[in-house]
Length: 581
Ligand SMILES: Cc1cc2nc3c(=O)[nH]c(=O)nc-3n(C[C@H](O)[C@H](O)[C@H](O)COP(=O)(O)OP(=O)(O)OC[C@H]3O[C@@H](n4cnc5c(N)ncnc54)[C@H](O)[C@@H]3O)c2cc1C
Image (cartoon, rainbow, N blue to C red; front, side, top):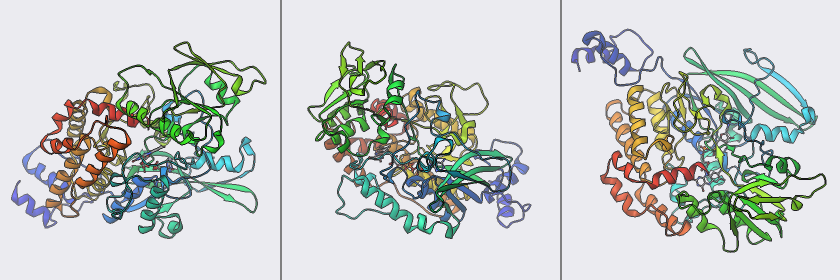
């Protein structure tokens, strides 16, 4: 480093610029040394105004860190309250569309209002029943009730299922109910004045507000917003549309946010004829409705096996249909989920078709043909526990529905979501590589989430440097290769107690703390080891002795670098299972 240049910059002798001081330093150095690649990303302007989409645990953590770093934050949440997936409601989502829509449209169809490009605020009143939608259905379409059911208990131990900054009391049970997690997320929001009661006072939060479109024009992100308000006195809904602009955006709108429905012949007809009896697992709430019924659960991975457990004491007969039932290639979590299915549940093979229903047929008169030739009849309800895809219609320009797996797109835009509804192009499960003023929360929210949120706050406030995009791509692709090849393209950042999580902890801590030595600001420490150990002990009981991560893995992870991750075949399986969450 040229000391003269350093001195000039630090004393403010460079031209007055809004860029962080280290960017000015780099530019000044270039004028003395001539061209050379800047190893760090250069933001075109200082970041001050930021938007966070989603008030689940991820979005809340981001807001807290960004505010602490001195940035002006707006938080947009389509539901009435914070909590995200953990905001349990008795209401259920509207029936899912059949057949499966493209990923870019699977979550919802954006409604930009009567004049999307107008700067002025627009309003419209809706009557009950308008467009064949009741007021309640219009609210459900807008806010989408979450997917947890009344008796759901987390399959992750409490040590890795709470906010790092708010440790749980020592006597907290290892197994948390969804009600406890709901309380802890709401309490976190309240502690930081982000709850819906604190709402508009601070001008930070905007609840009941769905983000409809996010586009970058010049160096500003323009966000189109739509807010719904129920007017109980006149039995109307008032919809308001407006636009706000930001320097940077965090998408914390959940990865598994749109249901996946399989393309099985006849299923569409069954679903449209019997919407109350053929539903996706996100609409499951309580077992009472299924008393003495014969229930067919399609897919017996994490949700399917847990719903089978919940139904078991009340249902008359439970049948699970699992793809490739006999295959030894089934993912480890699917095998582990089998350990959760109560004895007495009948496990059968893959479905070939649902029969053609004649007018007047009840659902139990229909037949279900399995690929192995078995024919089922007398089914009262079908629950599609077939998982979720990522669908963010508000950034349709970053969806590419035509590419699958790791296909290369034939467009210049690096996609964020591919045609399978899987994420790509995200550095450390956080920064969109071609333009890191866009952040995607793709990490496991509770344990890697805090580090990711801190990294964003530091980078955007000029307290940490991000590698340039060439280096980010290199590191990203290297990590994917190390973690087992092309199918793991969206692996980066997920982590669930596996060695990839260990890598991410060490990566974030080493990077952020060395930057803190130069630029000051908060330092951090790796995730407490005892909570990771708690997870392994819990998982061996919860998932059974076959659970593939052991205490030794943590010891090994202490000594191994990212290349060693490639040896861990089970990582792919862990990831594949988590994708079906
Ligand atoms: C059935 C089920 C069970 C699970 N069990 C576990 C478990 O046991 N352990 C575990 O660790 N994880 C579990 N998970 C994963 C769970 O999603 C995470 O624990 C966590 O909630 C993710 O946090 P998040 O903030 O990223 O997303 P979420 O909690 O889903 O929050 C996202 C928020 O974004 C909002 N949003 C979305 N789109 C928009 C928009 N366009 N405009 C405005 N707001 C928007 C949503 O309304 C929501 O409030 C489970 C998930 C499901 C579906």
